[in-house]
Length: 276
View (tube, rainbow, N blue to C red):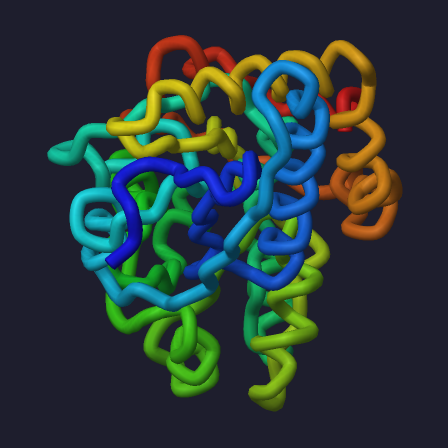
């Protein structure tokens, strides 16, 4: 069994980082941000080694990432309702400029014209959004009057889209291209829609095991340091410098949604392509 605290090995802190249940590009990005944070704090907190775990936890099993799985920290959306009954320490500093909140549809190629012509809110709300079980998006979409098909998981979402179980599924601008290449493209007849975009506050933040206040302090201090030094912006730009142009974000029709789950400090996040 893993220790409940980060343990020392020859003066090196071993940090168990859970990095599963997410797209490949998110895994890469969040891993790099964490390593940069820990590197920035060596002088104050000592050397480190990241022990990464990418196990996939189905449904609400993810909510026990601390209490049963005993991982030390991970990244998720602020206000994630899977963890509302669990204790955790939240580092309330977004690490990816709310890029996950720019939601880009993946659709059937035969429906391109349907999405191109669906210009009104009422027309879009009638199109059914396929969302894996327990994802926060389902609550957000329903709250805003959208049709939702909540079933299955990340692994079967595109198979169900091809089977006409729903009209589309949507992913953040930070991962939709990676998701399409590595997962959706395995199913024939799917494309990334080029006309629409949904937006809601959906910032990615660190959650830390509640038994690890020193680790939480290290993450907070290090994150602040790489924000101030510009290192976080450099990492972001190394992944997403051209994302506005690549996805044509400025040309898309945007539908704004309220996120009833978001903590108050993030509730005023608005689309701002100039900051991407």
